Length: 556
Image (tube, rainbow, N blue to C red; front, top):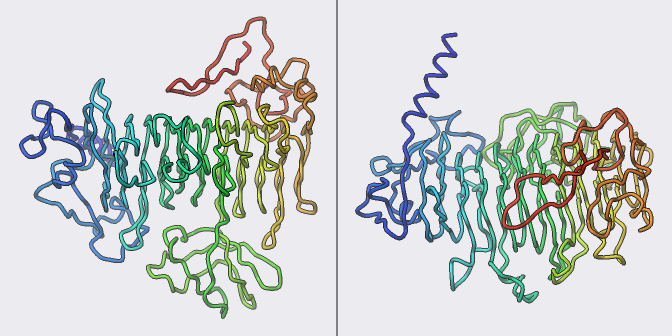
C-alpha cells in the first residue's frame, strides 16, 4: 500500500507541475515573449533555436544505445540547463501559421512533451525530425514539404531516427496529423513524383513504444515506416504512394490494425508494396565457434540484439534457432553469447533476426480504388521476407493485381486466418493475388495455420507441418460476383447466398470480423461476417478525415 501511495503521489506531482506554453508565428516573439498565452513565443522552430526546450543528451560517446533516460538517468545530462523553460511533461500549444522546420538532434525526455494546436488553431510545418529523441507526442499538426517553398525539399515529413553514436529514438507518438507532399498532384509527371514525393511518417528505430494513430497521409513516397517493440499503428489513412504504403521494421509485439491504404503510383522500377518486410540479417565476422560464443558484426542494430531469437545458417544447409542472451555490445566487433550449443557449427555469412508476435489485423489495402489515379501500379499487397515468427494475420481485405496477396518467406508459427484476397475490379486483366508460404534457401517455413480465407489461389510449402483448411479458392469474376455484395463497386461484404456463409471453422479464428461485428458459432469465410437482418445501417469503420470515407455497409 505504501508503494502504491508513493507511485500515485509521483504521478500526481508530474501532472500538477506540467506547464503549457504558446507559440504564435503571427503575433508572437521568441525574443521578448515568455511563452504565455498573453506573451507567446514566435515559431516553434525559433523556440528550439533559442534553447528554450530542455535538451537531455548522453554523457559519453558512443552512446549505450539500449538505455533510456528513465531507466538509466546517470547516463544522461541536461545540455541546455539554465536556459530551458519547457521540460518533461509540458505541452506546447501552436497557433495558426507556419512554424518552420524542426530538425532536432538528441532530445531525450523522461515524460512526453506534447506539441499540438491551440483551440481552433491550424499550425503547419514543413518537416519535423528528431535524431534521436524520446517521449515526444505530435498531435493534430499539418506537415507538408510544399510549405517550405523553393529550394531543396527534405523528402520526409515526420521522422524519428537513431544515430550511430547518439542512441536511438523511442516512445514517439504521431496522432491525428495530416501529412502530404503537395496539396494537388493531379498534374504531376512521373519525374515530378520521383523528384518531389517525400516519405510520410518514419519511426523505424528498433527501440520501443512508437505509435502512429489516426493520421491522414497523402501523395507520398512511403506512407508509414514503423518499428520497435510494442509499436502501434492504427486508424491511419494512406492515399497515393509511389513506393510502399507501409514498411515494417524490427521489433517484437507490434500491432498494425484498422489502417486503410489505397492507390499505388507506379513511376519507377521499384516493386511497390502495400506492406513490406525486408529480410532481417547481419554478417558473421568470425566462423571460429567455441561452445556458445560467436563473433558477430552488430553495427547498425545493437539495440535490437539482446534477448532476440536469431537463425544461424550453417554451410551444410542446416539452420537452428538460438537466442542471443548477452548484454548489448557497444562496439561492432564483440563476442556475444548465444543460448544453445554451437560446437561444430560453421555459419554462413548471414544470421537472420526474427520479428515475433506481430499482429496484422482489420486492415484494408487496395492497389487501385480511384479510377483517376495516374501511373497505375500492380502493387504487391503484403510481402513479408524471412523473419516472421508467431504472427497473427487476420480479418484483412487485400485487393490488387499482383500475384502477391499475402506472400511470406519461411514463416514459423503464424496464423493466416479470415482474410479476403481478391483481384481489383479496376484491373480486370491483372494478375491473381493469392496466399503463399514459401521456404527460402536459408530456412524452411513451419507450423503455420491457413484457415477461413478467400483468395484467388493458395501456394503453401509442402512438408512444412502447416495446417490448411476451410479456405475458398475463387479466381473467376463469376465467383466474386456470387460471393460479394457489389464486387465492381468495391463492397466485399458477403451476400447472404454466398458459399462462404457459415462455412468456416471456429477453431483459432477471430471472434469479430473486419468491422468488429461478432462472429457466430458457425463463422463465415473471409474478412466479413454476414449479419442477417431486416434493416441495413451504414457503419463507418475508424475515424477518417479529409473526405475519405468507407462505404461498406453492416447489416443489423
